[in-house]
Amino acid sequence: MSAAKRIVVTGMSVLTPLADNLEGFLEALLAGRSAIARLRAFDTDNIYVKVGGDLTGYDEPGKLAALSSLIPEVASVRLRRLMKRAPWAARLSMLLAVDAWLNAGLFASSSLNPRRVATLVAGHNINANYQLQNTLRFLDEPDFMDGLFSVFALDTSHASLVSEVLQLFGPMYTVGGACASGNHALRSAIHEIRSNSCDVAVVLGAVSDFAAPDLHALALVNAISCQSFNDEPERASRPFDVRREGFVPAHGGAVLVLEELEHARRRDARIYGELLAAGSSADGNHQSQPNETSQADLMTAVLAEGGVAPEAINYLNAHATSTPLGDVSESRAIGRVFGRHTRALKVNATKSMLGHTIWASAVVEIVGAILQMNAGRLHPSINVDQQDEAIDLDVCSNGWVPLDVEYFLKNAFGFGGYNAVSLFGRYDGK
Image (cartoon, rainbow, N blue to C red; front, side, top):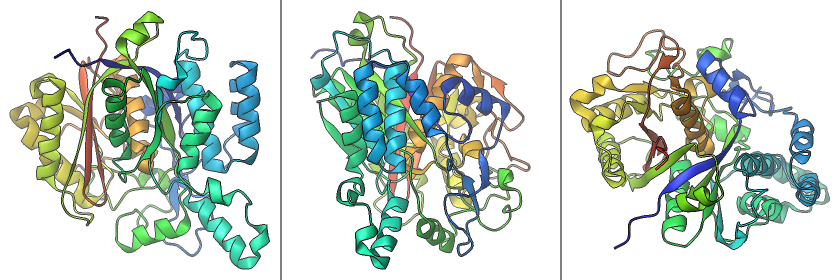
C-alpha cells in the first residue's frame, strides 16, 4: 500500500471586521483587538440581540479594484461581471476566493489542470438575510423581488460562482455541519486529494448573511449574548470567563487553498503548513447539548490518524464560543485527551475577538492559527476577567504568548451533535 499523499496549505485569505488581509489580521489578533460593535446589518429594535461582528459597509469596490490590478485581465473582467448581479455574501465569497488563489500563486501557474481542482464551500443557510428580504418584497409586491432569486437563494451559488470566476472544473459541492462545517469541508478536501485524484482543493468558509429572526430565535433559547454587554459590545464575547452568557454572532469568511505536496513542490509554491488529519463524529442527539465524551474521542482519533502523540501538541485553538455549557464541556474533553499534559498546553479563543463567524468559523480561525504558528506567537483570549474555575486550562488571558508551535489542533462543534477536529503541522521542508 502506497503512502498517503501529503497535503499542504499554499494559499489563504481572510475577511473579518478586524482586517481583510493576512498581515492585518495577525496584527489585530496579537494586539487583542475586538471586532464586536453594535449591529448595523439590519434593524435590531424588535429583537433581543444588539451586538456582533458586522461587515456592513465593507469597501467591496476598493478590494475589487486592488485584486483586479493583480490578476490576469480575463479573470478581472469575469470577476467584475459576476460581482454586478450577485448578492452580498456571494460577492464576498468571490473576492475571498480570488484573493486566496492569488496568494497561492495559482493565477501564474501554467501546469495546473483545472479539472483536478475541487471547489468546496463550508456552510449552509448562508444567504438567510437575502432570502428574508426577498420574501418580504414578494409579500409586498411579487415583481419587486430579485429576478435571480431562484439561483442566488441557494447555498450552491457560492461554489458555482467561485468555480466560474477561477475557471475550475473538478468536484464542486457544499458541506454543511452547523458550526463544525469548516472542519467537515477539510475532511472532504482530504478525500478529494487523496482518493479522487485532485491536485488542489479550494475550501471556502463563506460569510454568513444571517438574518434578524435567526438571532432572535437563538436568544430565545439562551444561546446568544443579549443581556449584559449591549452598551459595551467589545466585552460581549468572553469565552472561559465566569460572566459569559452566549456566543456573539459575526460576519467573517476565509479561504484555504490545499494542495498535494508534490504538486506544490513542482511549482515551487510557498507553503504555510501541512494538513495532517481531519475527522468528524456525531453525538447521536439533535439537541444543542455538547458531549464531552464524543469530543474527546474524536480528538484522540484525529491525533492517531495524523500520527501525532498528544504530548507533541502544545497549542490548541478552541471552539470556545462563550456559551456557559459549551466552554466547560470542551475544557473537560481536552483534559480527557491530554491528561497531565494539559498543563503544558496553550489554548486560545479567537472568538473572544471576532465573535462567532458561524459556519465559516473553523476556516477563519485556522487561518489565524496558521499565521500564529508561523509567527511563533499566540494571540490572547480577551475578556477573561475572572476565569471559570471549571475551566482548568492556560487560555492565554494576559496578552500574546511566544510559543514554538510544531502541531496544533482545531476544534469545531456544532448545534445538533456535530463534532469536527482538524490537525495541522508546521511544514518541515521534507
